[in-house]
Length: 602
Image (cartoon, rainbow, N blue to C red):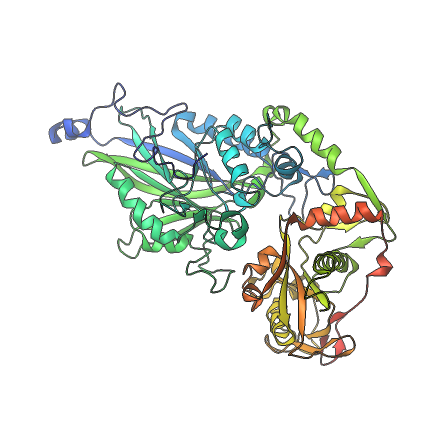
């Protein structure tokens, strides 16, 4: 499917119950009504509810494919579109389906083994391939539009285009541009005309914006094909157009958090989490459905600098754990519908049962994936757990690094860099990841690496690695000597997520958490000797980090020695299959630890 598709521009998309075409019977053009007629009629009022989800990440069922059990967490959240469907049905029953719309803010087709299976194992792009489970479920529920998320690009543009083709609703990305023409590669917006009892349709514009970080995180898939300018810039371009086209309500579905921060440092001149900046800087927006940050924001109001108008933002929690409701109260004034008030709230999906219509629709796909992930691929000499990995050197992270380093050494064999020592970085992506002693299945190994990252090799110096580690360990809260240490409060300082805390295998070091960030790495050594700042090393690193994800110093500009297109998860699974067994004693060692003034914390 060609990237440059302009035939949608200026078109009014009109499908679904309660939505009418422009010029439908009963709709009197505003210009045909006189002021006396308007006064005679009195003010007409109408209420509209727009529901929203985001960061569904391949969740249809309330199921965890990594634990092979019903999903559960400490807060007893539930997940999945089957739960969302029940909530949506309740809202439609209460409000009247014709008075509602349903949209999404992106990150739809990556995240679970269900979505992975239909991208890689039985791909939707294959000859006569299946319809993606997320497309089936979202079509059945009746979505009106969805913004593109950055993870939509993880499996490449052909997979995304096939998914787009399978959806009964548009995928929106006003700032996803064709690299050659600089014109939208996807539909920028959709205009819905909603029938009211007054015979005067409400024109609701939904503008989709995605994350500029795609240019970094999925560089291999999009470079030379698409570019992703900033959200504020593109919103400023499109919102006035939507208003000039007669939009009564303008909603933005933004796959971009609200904090105004970026995780890719100075790699791009754009802000990663720009939703609040869009509200502040671009007049004419009524509400923003926020995505990407995986946080719960029931309602957040931002004043537009130019107009002073309050823009309502809401971000429902990830994976279908929450459903946002924007409630709009409109009044007919001056020959058109005016937004009188907007409010937002979220509904919790753990309050309802799964919709049997959705679970029944995808029962066969679910069973196939369960059977796939439960295949035994080898054995382990000992159990490994990630529960303490964020603050202790654990074998489970050593295992990831062992496989990565061995893979890179093999790839560089015979090259000019074959004699250099290979180090490796890894993060604790899931604190619930575990590999049992004895038989090991695909799901247990896959649980170590839930992201679609691929492996690279970069050339780094000792001095650069020292700075890399110092940056990483800002993750820990500064804790004075003698003060009590609570593991639950020790990590994630400055809001750094677990996936942006790296340990580096092949080096030995202490992290003095009593010290301020920037001076915490103590006793950094290699092969039993203090690290030589001028020495060169090969760092086995995932493509997210190598592309600037997390803003780590030096690595994004370091020389690339090798890169692989296979997901690290599959590399690890393939390693276990080839070896047949995991000998934990062959790689597990304590090479780093937390200290205070030389005294180990644990």
